[in-house]
Length: 120
Image: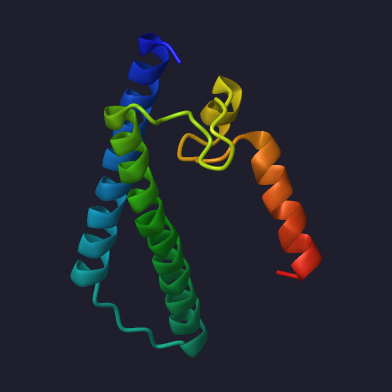
């Protein structure tokens, strides 16, 4: 992978990381600042459901933060874009679709096929 591609992914990953962190801070502020009393139990249930959904989204993003940080580390140590299974280059289109991936498309397909066989 050439330096131009690495710079693109470093910038993209850093921007994604900052965006996720900003959303997390906004969620914390919204949930600590908002103390609403609902007269209607249905309104309260809807608000609680929305809050639970938002927290699930932030939890998924929290897990993504770790993957983004690991991808940035791989860029720094020169292993970004190299499949952890076979050692081949991961295609740029695949990396654009999933910048945190550690597997080329063939190895990922094999992994998913194995999971299907095991019933996971």
